[in-house]
Image (cartoon, rainbow, N blue to C red):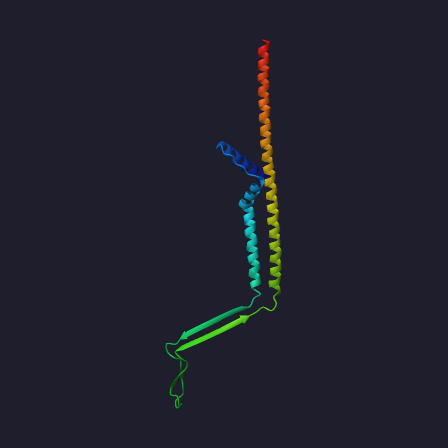
Length: 187
């Protein structure tokens, strides 16, 4: 957490100093800073992707409960028809051709799981896993907002402290000039 705070403070300081170096003013209010952090944070993007993957996994598991229809087909071409050799003296002759030049087979299968405890348990576990991922996402989001606000207010405090230090320095210079002027008058 301290590394994140330090990183945010450094980034804000660099942004402010680079804006001053270019004689431009970079004005970011706290809401804009939070919006930028929420849109650009890699951890939140990864958490969101993880949530979407778990939602798709639940849909996949629920798909196992739907009826499944499958079809198959087969085609066979006989170059020569199969033959059966017959004993002598049969009315069909010494060989009998059977079958046809082309053969077709087809089938359709429909299956529906009536009850599968493993599928229902898998769906329940994946839903709990999804809820856990959502909570982790919300926790990361709340921590990020907290760190941005803390860093933002620290920067404002540093800016005000800088102004106070400059005023003290100017006051010290004025006192030094007054003392020099008094010493010239007394000489």
